Image 1: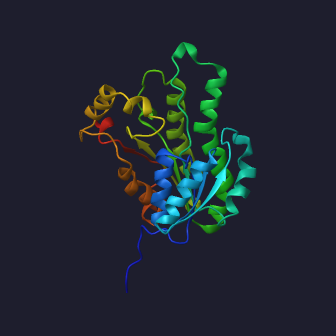
Image 2: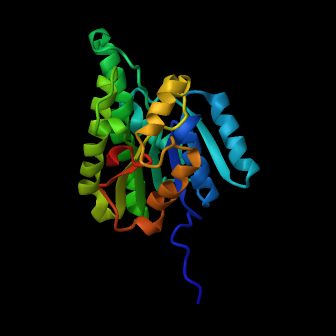
Image 3: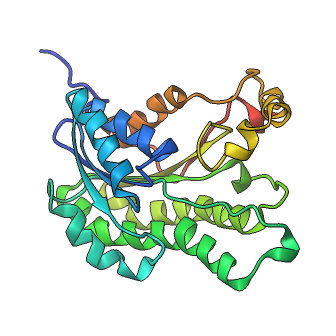
Length: 255
């Protein structure tokens, strides 16, 4: 008798926020390639549609939901919209986020709350809204996106760092609350990958080389480096892994 593929996601539904670009879009593609039907969530509809077309081109299945995720109080209503294309979600990837890179003296209450709402509050309230469906299926995987700044401080990043430090603890608290229901909560903390958020790094050759030099591997991240961690944490193979922050950073935080 053949053994089941512990990394297959056939029959699973994944919701990915921040799926119009960058890490969110890449992770959505990895999940679709592993067999999941993916609901792509972000503000920019045209970018979402391009991402969905790319998934369809490789034989995957994706639907688009255009919404501003900066209002976490709307999560309960949003959960119903997200279940419409394929049914209740089994997998949630919280990849939407912002980093305004403001000097500390320029931070306003408005910019502080905008960062904390999108990066920290929305992942919690959206996950809580989707948990009943996961609980009913006796299968759930929540993958939050943490950061190097979950552990380290960088210039002009105080609200972002505070939010990402919170994501690490949020992940542990989610695991404590929901793991007994078969819902595993983990986080991926990427190093430097080329995205819209990291454009200031990759647009400056000196800064880009500095980031690469901080790793033990000697290079910055490439999107494909996230494929294995994403599929593992979304799949049955991670059934005894919960409350963890996995640094996919080329050894940046190892030294």
